[in-house]
Image 1: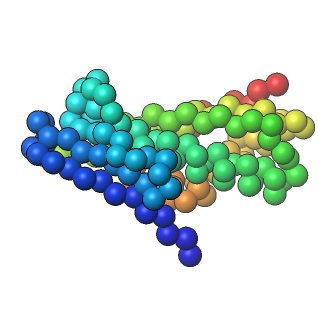
Image 2 (image 1 turned 30 degrees about the vertical axis):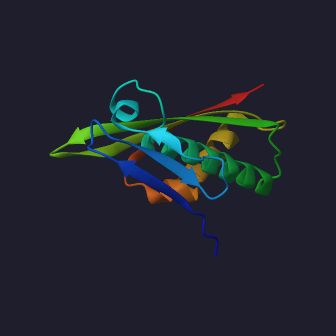
Length: 142
């Protein structure tokens, strides 16, 4: 079992307050976040951006693993995410996450790549965490 730790500290009200997010590795160390960085264009990070980064990283690793199992070695996998936060009822929900992946894989064809990419989209541990609809566009580069 692997356990990774992170924490957040929040001070003040929802609109006038602010917080910091940190990780045990120190990659994030008191990174600021708040209402403006989440719902407007303020400085700092936000949970959706961090979720998107985590999902992109997890998916890319899962895709690399599954390509290797198929006898293919990627030169490069680049995954971008778009995490949508919508008002639903009285609150907010992450309703969709879109993966946009481009990969350079010698010896692969588009059909096989899409098949493996879809398996990675479903099988990545972060994908399994979400109830949101996850969509994807997968392009094989030459």
